[in-house]
Image 1 (tube, rainbow over the protein chains, first blue to last red):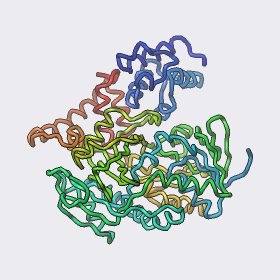
Image 2: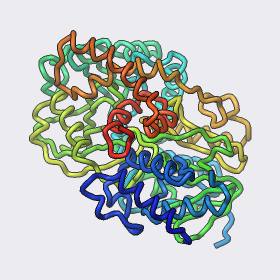
Image 3: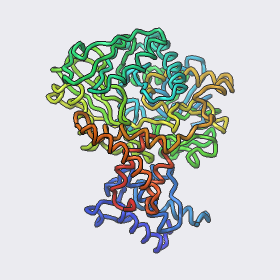
Length: 86
Length: 458
């Protein structure tokens, strides 16, 4: 994974915005989305927040496969390298 | 491992196993890929009450064409069931279902009775006090006895299918979670692959996540998940001989009790839409409160003294038009057998026969209403929202709550207008995304819940 720092920072900020106030301090690349208390609805707000912050799409069918914050960053890096950056 | 098999089946719920067993009986060799033991977290079959509901899933607002198509297939399955269970060595289904109407909802029994009578099956109206073994609340509005609607133990069924397949010389079982299906190749956890002439994908709510691009390139419609929580109870105080259920209402399957062996009662089930299913997520306090609250308030207050022995989560797969997905996709090597929503256990032998017929004679399902490549009608959003107002109020009241008639009417008028305004607001991107992915009545409670979440654009 070769996440550039701005992309990584944008994702971490979006995750922090989408999770409950009590878990914001636990946000890191290694944190699991379930561990941060993000259920399926929170994942939608997370996907929207990430798309708005990075310009990269997070499709609905990618959501079930995302276990950790790092998975989400990987998903975006793959798209960035594939040239789908909006 | 390069052992050749004719057909690979990805998925080990009731439908996938039924397809595998049907093909084996027709002399086709199969490879089954999916967990054989373990918890099967999130699997709909093992969390299911396994009511074999030929008629009692029908709701007053259902489109008559949908009711006709679904009832025909459910009756076909009903007719196959006795011989199918007999061949599997599973005891006969337990016959008889009571559909009980909560206060003010007697009209919900009418379309169920009408469908049964039209099909030549008996349907008898009774007073609520006549349901044996149950102390229904005084305000219950009546009961409908359907003597031909049966139930089975879904765990016993999947175990019998597992044993029958695993012991068959024509079968190979790869005991691993499927991670991808592409053409005729099934990839499972650990990186192993199985190649077959054709793959039957019966992975329920996870189906889309296993296919490239969610299956869009091969014509697979979106598959939604109705997350349901169910319980097994040790309930010596509530001695039931038959299924007791309420009609479906307020986006949920009606609350239902299914007698199992000994004094065990199955209690189901919640129903919450999810477009990103997480099979590992355990039942939440809110889900348990809703399930138990409804059961105690609508069926029998004595359930409060029962012991909870097991809690399960199942992800029921369904489509936007609520019909299953059976047969060939746009890739002739990939077939689906899924999206059975609340009726997978009932439909399993029927769908297995349909899939087998398509494999034996490609094109056999080209005119079937459940074919994968059908046009899936998208519901009219305004109609869904306005039609769901009364259900939403019932959903929020949960069981025995009350509103004055005037407050109910005002809320029913206010809610659709408010939701339309909310969806049109510039900051409501997450709400619109959910609504576009799932323009179905089941999305309404999720829209309500999403509105208050952090980052949802308040």
